[in-house]
Amino acid sequence: MIKTVAGVDEAGRGPLAGPVMVAAVILNPRSPIEGLNDSKKLTVKRREQLADQIKRHALSFSVIEISAQTIDRLNILQATLQGMVQAVATLDQPPDCVRIDGNQRPPIAGHVETIVGGDGLDPAISAASILAKVQRDQWMANLHQRYPDYGFDRHKGYPTAQHLDMLTQLGPCPAHRMSYKPVIRALEAHQSER
Image (cartoon, rainbow, N blue to C red; front, top):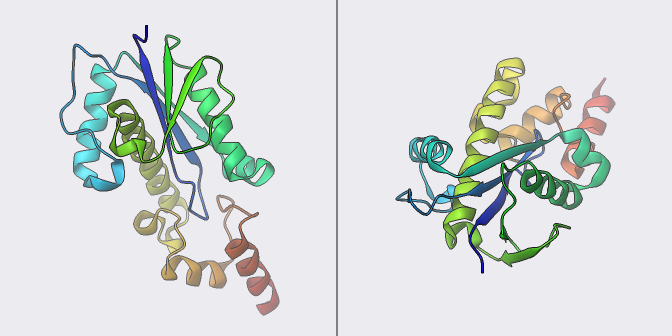
């Protein structure tokens, strides 16, 4: 019988810079949290409010940071799957079931379910989605303090026109994912202009 479910999700697979954050959450059925949803469908303020509630009321949670360097070394899929394994392993208690957003099953022992669109369907996955997104956004806001010219506070490392333009002008910073094609192209363009 399944008693405890850990929801697992990540934030930051698509950006050209910064880490992927992977979260695992075991919600407390005695302390339900209203309004859990896919983090992308919530406002920044609502995500932050829910993140505080999740941290206060969940039976257990963990957030794992996978660096740009690890992503470059392993590739984004393998880095994310590794983060999922670590996030579940660092929970305070082993769950009876692990539910993952998406269709890729990480090498986690025991009962694992993959759910496409799970961040909008399963409350525990929604909670993990929110924690991962909030922590990654905070990380990118801190990165903006160190490298303000790139505009990380606005695009969070995603390949917007502004980000690509600044990347070409300035070249990549240490937080960029050097294995990503737009970063490789920008580095080549920046070096050829010197």
